[in-house]
Length: 88
Image (tube, rainbow, N blue to C red; front, top):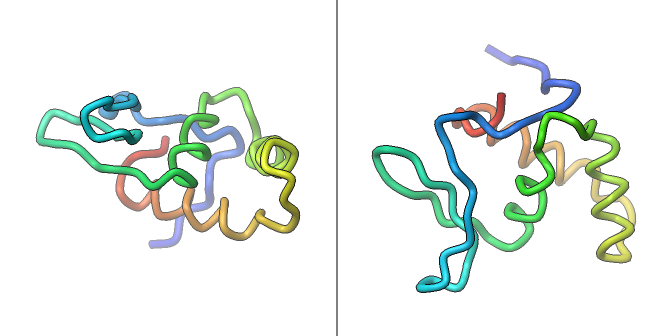
């Protein structure tokens, strides 16, 4: 089943995004465990607040990291996050 991304993605209430000092990285916590995130995934998911659109997230990341054309990678991560239940 291929479900379209939400217009304004947000992190599922089942997950909590936080920085883990002991691991020096961002993680997604959930009752059964933890998902360690790479820096790019963390930057994307930190912006999934239900207020920013996917295009706004891409624009913000491109400006923050002086990068262009990252839209497909951002959308791929969001689609994977949606498949895994991280994104509502």
